[in-house]
Each structure stands twice: as C-alpha cells, then as structure tokens.
Image (cartoon, rainbow, N blue to C red; front, side, top):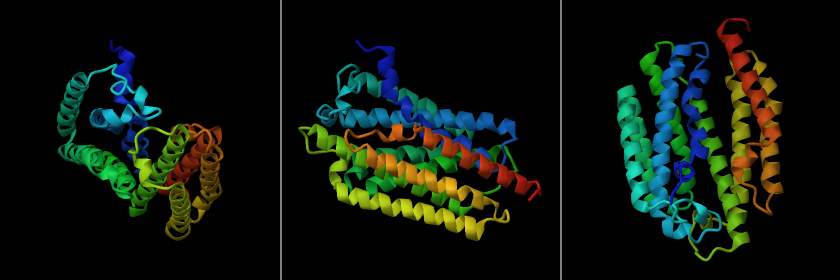
Length: 300
C-alpha cells in the first residue's frame, strides 16, 4: 500500500530547485528590494513545480517497463508497483489542471509559457529524448522557458523591469546544457557498472568519449562567453573582473568532481552540494549583485 512518502517521491520534489530560476529573475532584474513582487514570483515558482511534477509523473508512466530494468529507477514508486498507474495518472491530471488554471489566473502570458513548457516536456518524453543531441538541447531550452516565465510575471506586476540582456539567456542555456550532458555521463557510467538487462535509456545514445568531448567543449564555451561578457559588455568599469577567478574555479571544481567519481558514479545533484561549489557560487552571486547594485545607484 502506498504511503505518503511514496507520493512525495513520485512528485520528484528534489527536482523543484530547477524552477528557482523564476524568482531569481527578480534578483537579476535588479529588483531585490521590490519585496511585493516576490509574492507573485513565489506563486509562479509553485505553479511551475506543479507542472514539473506532472511531467515527471507522465514520464514515469510511459517508461514504467524500462524503469523496472534500470539499476536505480526500478525503485521508483511506479516501477516498484507501490503506486498504480491509474492513481498516478489521476494525481497528475489533478495537479496539472490546478497548476495550469492558476497560471493563467496569475498572468495570461505566464499561462501560455507554462503550457509551452508542459508540451515541450511531453514531446521530450514521447519523442525527443530518443534523438541524440536533441534530448539535451530540449532540457536546456526548458530552462529558458522558466526564465521567461519569471520575466512575464515581472512585466505584469511592475513597470520597473530592466529587460535582461541576451547574454543572460545564453548563459542559462549553456549552463543547463552543461549540466544535462554531465547527467548523461553519470547515467552512462552507472549503466556500465550495473549492466542493466535492457538496451534502452538515453545515455545509450552516447559514448563515454563523446560525452567527455562535449563536456570540455561546453565548459570552454561557457567560460569564454563569460570572459567576453566581463571584458566587452561590462558597464561597471571593470569591477566584474573580480568574479572571473571564482567563476573559473567553479567550472574547474565541477569538472574535477565529475571526473573524480567515475567509480562509483557520483550523482550530478550531489556535485552541486559540494562545499567548494556552494561557497564559490555564493561568492560569485554576492559579488555580482553588489557590483551591479552599486552601478545602478551610481556609486561606481
């Protein structure tokens, strides 16, 4: 018999952090002191989490047979038989309906972008995740949709929004692509170690050598793009140069962890819990916010 904890695992709450990009828009549009807007952004975050959980539920229903042969996914509520497909489907429909209706009530255009987010995720579940390269690109594009969702909420409830520069969307896309390819690498290592009975799963589309080359390529693109932004597009008089050493450390640290835990595979979500990654991220975040706010108020 299913327990409450099984339904919590079905909703994949551990993946909700991806939707933090919606309230983060309020900070990076430099409205950190506009506290009233955060209520709307938090509501948008919760609604996006509902849509995300629905996507995970429907994905688990579709992949239930393959998940039962996977070394780790076989313990998921649906694959293990703890929750029936019928109950999962009913729960998914209820959560989706409430989340989508409330999204339109919050903002018509936010409802539209959440609809696109859901449809893209379902297209990924049924078709795109079986197409090499398109799978990780789709995951990355969904992060762009989250960011646009936060921006649409800001556009409705405040007139003080500074439109984000194109580089910010590029940065979100490249970073999401890097994390998606990282996950493919760890999944592939896990499958090689456990030797599952089935030949399916996304990582099977890639070879380890190809994923390693993609990781080096994407990490280089991300760092070079950030360097060029700081050097050529920085309007603070060069103060953002202070973030370059820490940003470089973060990328090097992540790659070090990624290649240090090949056996046994180290889940990518655990890489993000590394003290070095956490501290470096906090330092870059604080430096960036302080410098940009000092600029916006004319101090630099």
